[in-house]
Image 1 (cartoon, rainbow, N blue to C red):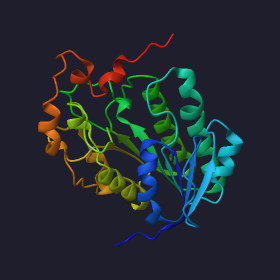
Image 2 (tube, one colour):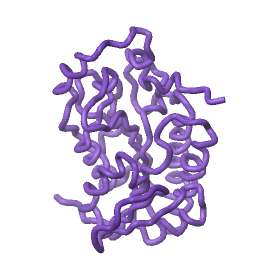
Image 3 (cartoon, rainbow, N blue to C red):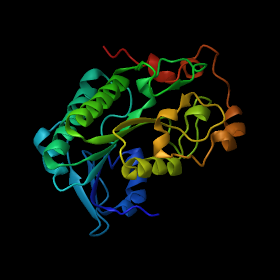
Image 4 (cartoon, rainbow, N blue to C red):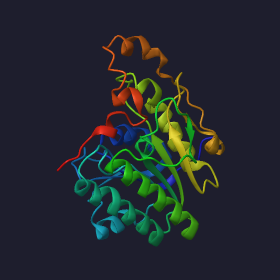
Length: 268
């Protein structure tokens, strides 16, 4: 059954790498797709798109952005490890502004682009589920932990439901050995978003965003109600990836879930 589209769906971070991919893929889920970023975006392609430039650190602008929206896919913010001061505005203040705006405007469903970097300090021989203690690997990972806590709080207190997707590595194909385990195809990401938007009674659900890869570190048993069934696998790229020179055994990309992020910085 095709889900009934929302009247207006907001996608933040629409100028980013995944945002540009999702811009086309989310059109069928809403009569109008509102696209937002602080960076320049391609013009709207018709009445089914709205372009709104917005700085997530600007509370008033975010409240205006969310007005008239039925659901939100929040992919905005800094997406790599950076100094804390660069993370603070978009990733920490921004997520608070977004949820406060959702509360005030009656939005009841949010997809939050969380990250595997919330648990980046687990080692690759450890298999974990959504209840494992979070072990962020940097300021970026800390900001995503905060976002998940905001999502949990706003469900418990205000009934705003969120699916937090701990995205692994979503690219056209895996780029290195670590990504053979963390890779998430664009089709599987789209399926996760669809299940997150339209599955009833999700509360605050945390789900790991990875395709059906051979070697998996993450157990999604606690998100079984989403009925996420990944269709793709990194295995078709294994020979190409393994033809690359192998990193040293103690390289972070060969040891930790979070790979190189565990060693990024300090920035002083």
